[in-house]
Length: 62
Image (cartoon, rainbow, N blue to C red; front, side, top):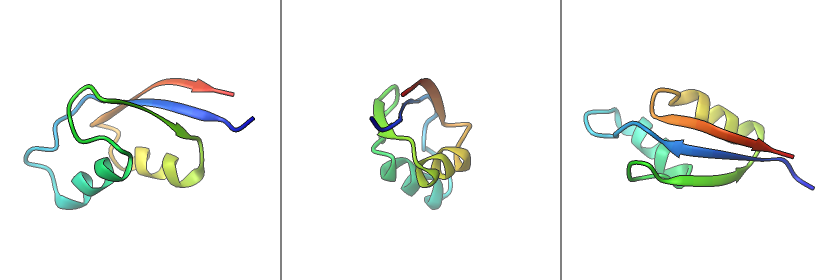
């Protein structure tokens, strides 16, 4: 069973650099308070670490 991570968008992409907006879209988030369950891989962790002020880790499964 693969590890998964549940993340929630808590910050707005308004007035943020384009690369931060693109990172949100890459994670599947683009509107406030959206929640996604993603596979816990180094690439996903890197994307989360790039925008820690806009996402919140809710739960780690596995």
